[in-house]
Image 1 (cartoon, rainbow, N blue to C red):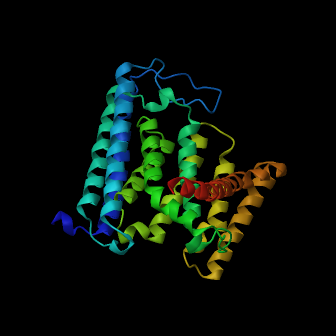
Image 2 (cartoon, rainbow, N blue to C red):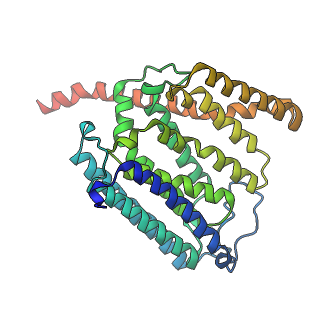
Image 3 (cartoon, rainbow, N blue to C red):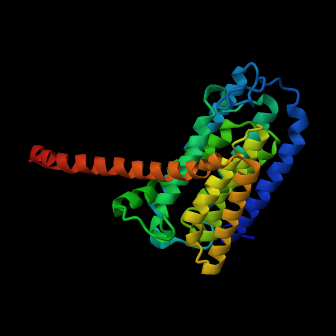
Amino acid sequence: MVLSRIDAKQAVNWSIVFSVLLCAAIVAMGGVLSQFEVIPVPDDPLVYEWQLAEQTAWGQLTAWLGFAVHQLLIWGTIAYAQKRYSKRDYGKTLRPVNLWALGINVVFIVLHYLQSMFFYDGIAQDLPSWTAQFAVALMLIVILGMENQRRGLFFGKKVKFRKAFTDGLRKYHGYFFSFAVIYTFWFHPMIPTLGHLVGFIHVVLVMAQGSMMFMRVHLNKRWTLLLEILVLPHAVQVALNQSSNIWPMFFFGFAAIFLVTQMHGLGLRPWVGRIFYSSFLLVTLYVYLVLREPYEVNEVLRIPLIEYLVLFIMYGIYLAGAWVSSRLRPLRLAVSE
């Protein structure tokens, strides 16, 4: 098969296969990783527990170097693609820039696998765990803003954001999304817990999505929704791995965002939506009347409120910047004259 004739949908399928094979390889490496002495399980949930008890120079050097070079090379492919192609150039087959991006990601995924095998530590030694969580959360929030014109923000209803705001999100989202997933990818060592494995599947698929820029599959609504909702099983499993009692916050929070926003871009029939709403309500009643206390039902609202609030804060910052720019424009014109 000629590489330039590879269908982008085939690349999606192969990226899924690759992510599963990567998980199998991580599980196979588990015995090797047991030789490393990690820190005791911390009481503080913000302290990342999968790091060496004593960091090593080689561990930190290889992790940071891998992250930095991986990031810069992918940013280079995005810049080239944006300069070379436009909205009219979305195609079905992979172009050289897509192959380069896919190849770069594969190479650095393999390098991170080897780096974990020999040195264990990711960049988590130098950074708090909330930074990786925040990067992914902000990526999901930006998606809400970008997709507002297609599926709406609240039950299919669109928010009247300024076009320049959503255009800016679309123009620069590739740079931020690649940073979010590559940062998260190099933050963690390749540990074979179920939470980590689901997380690695997620970031690998987002890397594949970013590599297929200016491809029609890049806009496929079912494929992009899959990349959004994978955060739900990942977050829930991480909470369970850490014996955390807040797993319902992640489950119901991300499920609520699906019901309020994400599913309305699928063109589902009304009866399908009613099934989703009814199922959500029944499960919520069971959990907070049987398994937990009724007052804890506020957990359902925490993540949706945070995500929607942050999106509107971002829009407020944009409006403030636009206002300042409009006031400074006459001064700049006066100076230039």
